[in-house]
Image 1 (cartoon, rainbow, N blue to C red):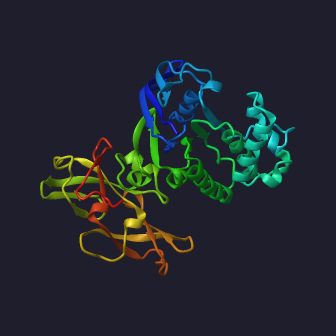
Image 2: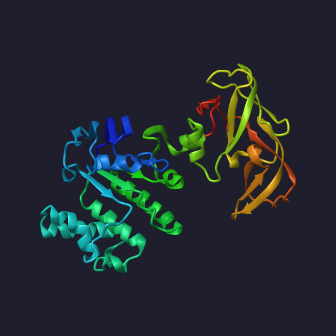
Image 3: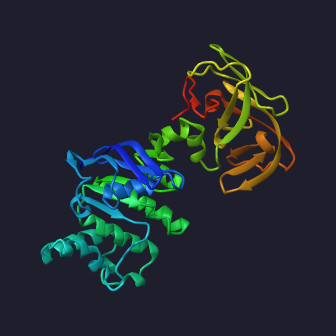
Length: 370
């Protein structure tokens, strides 16, 4: 399947410049998930590719074919929206076959395509029902089937699972992954849900204010965030972030003070170069990277009092300390620590990320595990 390329895209809404010189390349058969906070441009990006919005500058290609000047129906794109947009008076089979009927396809060809899509999506027994007789997940499958029968070069999904409950979203995520494995169609999928992005993506594109903050595999964005913004966007519980001050930094390493009861940590040297003493930085460590036992290569966090402990069946989230010095520890099993008890935690040195005053990551060697 051909990939998609957006080059130097500009898009304004009145006085607001959303995209300015925006570039994005999606490889053949790649499943790219676009995430970011509200207003960052996720849905507008899909609408530009689909032809529902026009760019003010730049070009859009699918493979070698330029599409930004073509009407939506000629772009080879199929889009599935957050709302199912099904025709209530039509059956499942009629809804799925509607775009083929509008294209003037022969009846026999439409019936074959609809039967194939229904079989693929587990809708064969529901083909004669109307949307009001279906569950939310079944309606979403119908919307996907309507896109599949068009045999597009590119699938666009705009938050397709946001109207479903948590259990159904988890099941539909698996079905999306299986569907992409079968079809291999190039896909751009927009969501605000970082867990959904992690579960589905070959590559994640994190948007911020109309630009790409970072892109890469889910593992890269989780373990090697390029900025504090990216680090905070992914992970549940959220990454721990501690304001700190550089005590000294040179080719031998970096010593920082967090301000929590004289706490100082000695970390490996940072590839971005030493910062002068007194520089303000942010330390970040994932809750699951913390441990209650010391070990080789680990740094020690000063004791903190247990504020709460939440049990999630198989793991426990323990809150330690308050204010800027607070930590969340994701502990696997074991008895719950008593509220108010002082707990000392440890982390591997390469799991403690350091972000410069501008919020950009200062990479260490070795980089965090992937």
